[in-house]
Image (cartoon, rainbow over all chains, first blue to last red; front, side, top):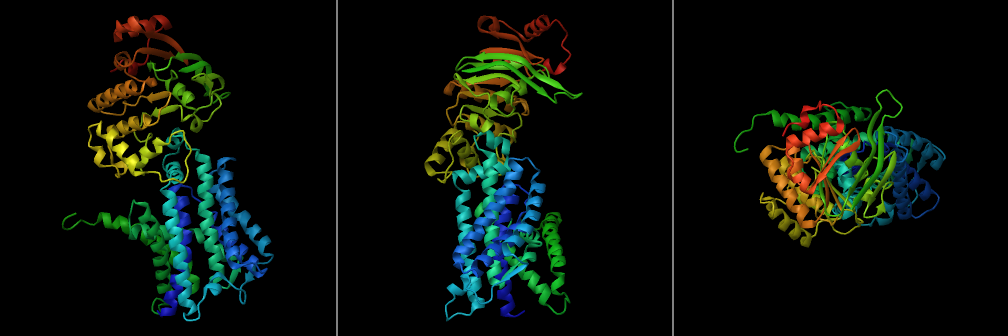
Length: 296
Length: 264
């Protein structure tokens, strides 16, 4: 595998690290099985690409994409909290609604970004190759998102959000408005995913209506792989694990698809994903079953 | 002060499994009084607590705390006035959070929650001091997940959490029922200490008649969603478990079918 492919894998891995952080908030912290992600990822891409192609500033367009993601998450939360639709179903409804909404936003199935400025071209210095610079910028974004998330989850509001997912009845008896917490958490989660979609569109040369297919599986895969690499109860380690999981996952996918002897091709991506998740889920179990040698 | 007037709650209304859990229950508890509540299964004890805490909306009647009508307020908006310890040690704490995080959550009970740090150093000192009074060594385990604690330890921490914020009402829902006798005794003594120390208006549901007479200053018996017996003062001091049973049978004019009530 060449350095170029490796950096490419790192780049996509870092984009999906943002998705993994979002999924960590919905699935792990709120315990809300949220499939909105499959719609809010392309939503972010669609909003950013459309705005940029209309001449908007790429940073403003990226921020708008995150805000659009937050709105999508808010809508799913609202369906669940206010209309009392089961969480999974609410998110599926939002996911399919977003398919139409994304087509409306783009006006066609894809919006290319070829000559238009992106956050990456604007920040691109002359001295460094773009395929090196992009992962660097993404790493900075992911790190900032991780630190911000760590900070938020350690605040009073963040603690209330964690209690809402862990024991909603107890949270209410402590005066936490759990419904509001679900709304806020879903907005936060999908804002991260929308941001990821916007950055993905800008690294891949445009937004496409089908770019969201399987996002949730990849995000969950990243969280699960991360948890098996770095099993941790502490939050700053859990967010780190999700990021590591996303990067490692993309690395293995690249390895599988680029190794001649394995004989896998691009269309095998989803199969590779499924196998990787199974392995990540089974590994910790096998580790427990094996007799322990030495100290503990 | 807690005042419940003519409370009605019916589960599954209009279906074959309709249950009238509360049927016009009225109860007034003056500020600072410690009331024990007994009754057979299905008498409405837990329903009453859930109605007071706001977990269950009432179909009719009125609930006032310190003269303020809270009947229509959801549980999270009553939290500033009502503290609660559940029967299940798992229910009153968040097992994924640490001891100090659970306590920090309770520290803000009923108050707004902003973007300030949830657990501050000064707060931690206060928690440590309070935990030390338990004599369980928990003051050295502030950053342990509370899920690692035993049921009794968790109930003890729940009680401390209930007293972290000044509240009007303390609701105890058979909070010693899931514990072994020794631990139950410890938690009960802790309860009496905390109630006295913070002068909480307390309602304690219990399955044990012995406990109902030994703890607190007034005993209320529920049957079929109403108060059927209400003793306090001299009258209560002279009572034994057998007397209580006899009084109950006299009041209801029927045999007690539930053995669970006789145990303990």
